[in-house]
Image 1 (cartoon, rainbow, N blue to C red):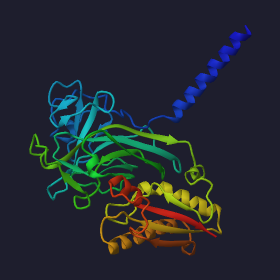
Image 2 (image 1 turned 90 degrees about the vertical axis):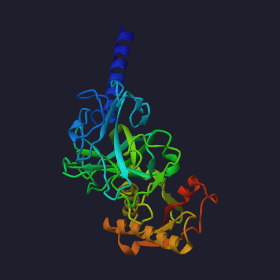
Image 3 (image 1 turned 60 degrees about the vertical axis):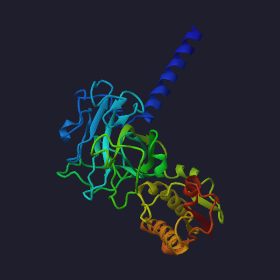
Image 4 (image 1 turned 180 degrees about the vertical axis):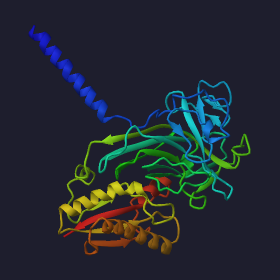
Length: 366
């Protein structure tokens, strides 16, 4: 009898732990893998209302497409009119034009309403997967995700006037062969309830590459960059800003710390929102140590002239300093420097080394 009671108790504890884990890992994105649909897709969309997966829609007059294994036509998975690709998981995914060779800045986006609004001050992990379609003649270096308190519904099919919380920028050579993930950890302002995926940058600020060995299967695929989207997630992260200080473990004076998640617009010193979480950790450390100052150093890779890189690195360090001041850190506690390409971490010139060399460093001073 005692053994039975003990076993029963253990089962109850296990069930409670599973329930708690399930709660902590709850995905706020309904139909995250585009598995459920209103109707099985037959052809590509010619109207925003034709987009078929449940809980998803088009925020503009752009016409995203829906693919599922159930289709016996152009929208089949893995073989369809835009390329050949299995889903990242499951049987379905979406497709969007993210860039165009025309000057019109034609764009397509997908939008969904989250299961609940994001909570003020809470941290969330956001991620989605994307893949260049195999019949797309062009690749681009970025794709993004934005959050909005209200549903976005506009009467045009070009850029949306909204800043993304993710603007994934990668080496173009990596964008042609497989599913890739874009992710960020953000601190919610509160009330964000709509999620939008697409390219939020202009044609001029988006780097593109023509894939010469490809032939477009249609006029649009021959002059645009077309991407599949799958497995979107927004999950609450049960940590606070103070807990985040583990990313700069036991901060000490006069030691150099590389800020790992600081991102800028391409060839620009404009900070992307995906940088804010890391910078808020820096602010928290400075608030806990009111006598400390911080020295911010900008560094670039080896590409470009010495003069250009010096200026860019100084401006990027200054942008980080400006963000700290906006959050209440006084200018007297901030020193910004730029070293251009003078202090690489790695001497090689492949893209992996260049990505590491492009950085902002912080050093705490007394």
